[in-house]
Length: 263
Image (cartoon, rainbow, N blue to C red; front, side, top):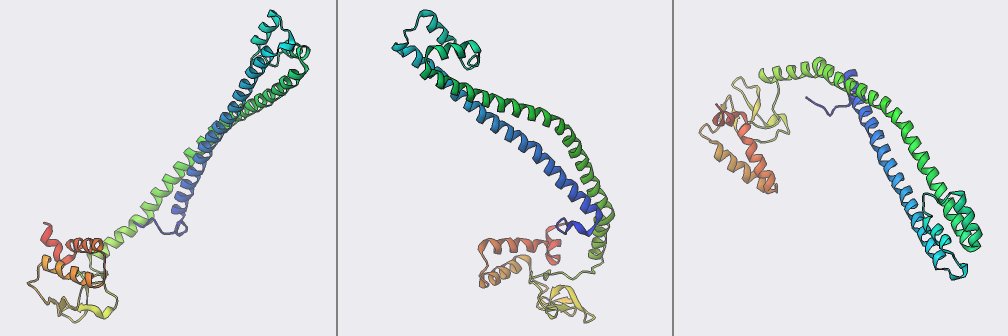
């Protein structure tokens, strides 16, 4: 089965690839949105924490400012201010009357808090709206998956499977020429490098060094000796040790030697 050919060679394969692509793209949209939402929310909450810290610092400045002549009730009022009630009108009026210097800082923090809260509410609203879109996306993902599976199934059953069966029949009927000698593993580059059958036709499996006139030139040759010769030849050609070892191991599957290792 060849999965690497272009998806345009059949409608079924195109449907399979299109369905898979749509599936991956829609899944990416959902995952990316969640990641983006978490990142933006984290960023806004970090800003809100900074404002909370600045509110506490402002309270300390107010309580430490001896020029304000704070009463116990004023100190208690200042202590009660926090990020949650900073926008209360009573607190705004209280700080404005208490200190002009601190009032401008207080209003600045109030403005920053309102902007951040607005953005958080807006972000959560967008996420709620997207949750309805997710339902549609999930449905489309399911459709894309079904589309992909149907494309793969029909492509295999109607195109690839008959092609595989045809290929197997050709192999069984010895219709194909092998790319390598099935005795010494030599790679065929030229047609004349092939051996000859008893009827003088070119062999589909063996080279002229190993096979001539329908018989092996060295019928007594064994697999271990054939491997040694291959290793020597590959070493002369500057093959790496790993590749030499791999090529030698593949000789076990050659037609001449396969019977000696399988029953």
